[in-house]
Structure formats: structure tokens, C-alpha cells
Image (cartoon, rainbow, N blue to C red; front, side, top):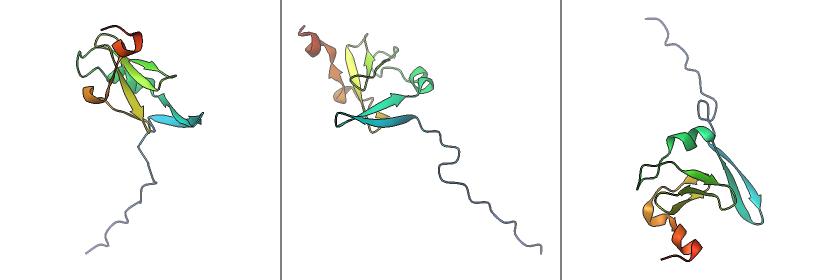
Length: 92
């Protein structure tokens, strides 16, 4: 019986692309969203496009009037976690 072939160990994170890079700014972690990821993500409420707001570190759905937070480089795409844009403008 021939000897079993040697397995190559994969380098850590091989094949995994970092989606974002985080930087601290004023004690807040700022995240840069990969444009390819932004093309794939849609609002879970309207299925419409999202805009990245770098200053607030959020993905904004203008159609739904919601802003989804990005925490530790991960977009939190839950409507319950989203901030209403109406509160921002004072509209009801």
C-alpha cells in the first residue's frame, strides 16, 4: 500500500478576503466597506440599494428610511437594529 499523500496546511485566512479594515477615530471604530459587498447587499425591508455613510459607519436605505449599523466590520442587517432616519430629521 503506497504512503498517504502529505496534506498541505493552509495559511491562516487563506482564501478569505477581508471585507473591511477598521481604524479608530475619536474612540470610535471606523470601517471601510468593500464596494463589492455593497453591490451585493440590499435593504431587507425594501430589497432596494444601500448607501454607505462613512461618517456614521452605517448602511443607509433611503427607500425604507433606515440606517443599518456596522459593528466590528459586520453590517447588522436587522430592521430592529436599524436607526430610523425620521428621528434624524424630526419628521413623524
